[in-house]
Image (cartoon, rainbow, N blue to C red; front, side, top):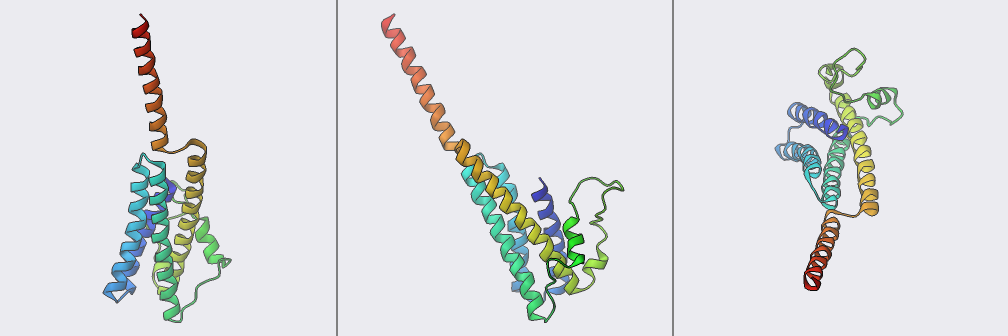
Length: 181
C-alpha cells in the first residue's frame, strides 16, 4: 500500500528531524508519537475484518498526521522561517516523487540521499509538510473509498448477520423436511 510506504518514509524522516532540530523533550515525544501513531494505525486498520473499524483506524491515522503537520508549521512559525507556498517549484518536485520498492534508474526518487533537503531546518520542515500533506490527501481518498464500499456492501457484522439468517432458514427447512418425511 502506497499510503503505508509513504507513512514509513514520514516516520523515518520525522525521527531524524526530531533528533536534529527539536530541543524540547515533550515536543520531540509528541511528534514521534504522532508519526508512529499514523503509521501504526494504517497497519492496524488494514488487518481489521470490520470495515467500520478500518474506517475508524484510518481516520485516527489521518488525525495523527494532521497533528504532526501542525507541529511542523508551528516549528517554522515560531522560528520566523517560511512555510513555502504549495506552488513553489521545489515542493512541486517533492509532490512528484513516488514511493516505490524498485531501485532501477527510472525511479527518480532517491530516498536514501536527501542531504540537500535535510541539511537545514527550513528545507527539512517544508519537505515534511509536503510529504505529510500528500499522505493526508491519500488517507482522505482512502477513507472516502472505504465509506463508499461500506455504503454499497455493508459491514462485517451485516455480512455475518446475513449468513446467520441464511443458516437459520436452512436449518428450519431441514427441520420441516424431517417432520414431513
